[in-house]
Each structure stands twice: as C-alpha cells, then as structure tokens.
Length: 115
Image (cartoon, rainbow, N blue to C red; front, side):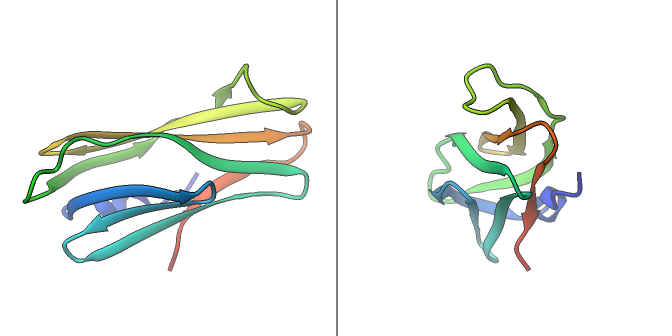
C-alpha cells in the first residue's frame, strides 16, 4: 500500500486532526500535509481513533512513519471488516490513528497523499 506517510519524515508536526472521516491532516511548520481515505465500489474506508501527543509550542520533528497491514476488525458493519494502524514517531511523542474498511469481501480501500 503506497500511503505516502514517508512525506512526513523530517517535518516538524504541530497538530493533527481528522476533520471528517475521509480526511487526515498533519499541520507542519511547512504547511498542511493531507491524506484521504477512499473505498472501491462497495467499500467504505475511513479514519478513526486519533491519538496525538502534546506538541507544546515547538511541535515534534518526525523521524518515522508507517501504516501497518490490514487485519480483522470485529466491530465492523459489513460482510468483511478490516483495520490497520498508522504510527508517526516525533520528538514530542507518537501519533497513532486507525484506518478502517468495511466491504463485501471483494472490494478494498486505501489512504493516499493529497497532491
């Protein structure tokens, strides 16, 4: 999965938000870095469960960022329900988020960098 999280490495993150379930925004000293979730035909892919450290006044320099593999999500609402976990390490602490996917077993979803 080419999620684009590596674009955050070397940037100073000052805030993170999920303004709606399909958008994840990292505020950096260089400007916002946005990601979108999308599902194929009969799939719903969305961001959930964001945990953000206290960045204080100076933010946190990102040293690593990764999105794990899809695994079963037992609380989903469709025939097949999966989730994967994002982790972004900064000098201020670790940012975590969940990417979730509900589908009929044939279609998938992904997160991608907004360009």
